[in-house]
Length: 231
Length: 80
Image (cartoon, rainbow over all chains, first blue to last red; front, side, top):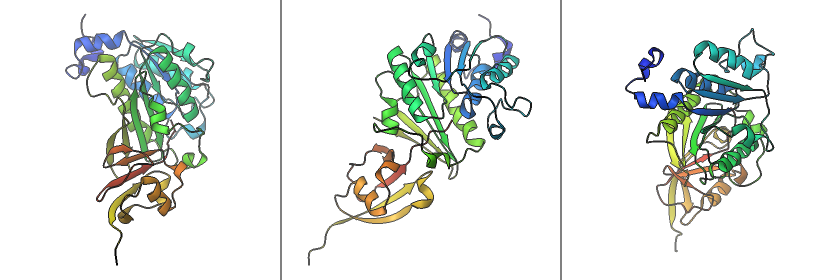
């Protein structure tokens, strides 16, 4: 297969075989906000062949500071529809599935079935546990990312790893108001999403060095990143 | 008089914990102290900390601390 011109500058970092693998890959992105927008953009440009993305929300003015596909023109528009338009303009050669749906325990496995990888770009810890369990039941690996203020975190879980209990503990999980008080500036999702997209590409291409059972913690305030073992 | 053996550790806090519970560079604790015991002394509620690392290795609330340990305490973050 010829190396398409649009992917020529992926070359060497990604072999032709890697590029072909990406072209036949199917990725499900849960959440299309700060993290999801950046992840989708990178995966579309990199050449992932099929991207499905779910989010029930519409763009609001408070999203303008960080959500890549949010513009003054599309306030009130479905996030996934806006993402689809933007992604089509970036790469018309890939398949896009926009799902204006709230993920819950009844629909998660059905939505995620048929994909090779799930990306957690959600803004809710309880819903993370739902997609974690669905990915587990489907035998699909998952790339987790979360942000708060100046901090981001990224990890990868395969079925059997128990990723979310190892990150968030096994107690009751609620979205904490205190957590939201950290704020959500634009640079943190951009940095964190880039790591998430990178992990996704590595998994799809079978490359080494994936953050499996390890958590990358990014502290943009002190310029410290660390990887801790979750085992 | 017999003195209790002591250990000295450094503690770093992150995100929502950072301002309320500032970093400690030289915290003196009794030998055999756990992370939970240390957090109790600092007034950090147990439920606020979900990720603990000791010298960059994942720890738990029950982990025993040793002299010279560097402890990181991280609250849950869940934004997207």
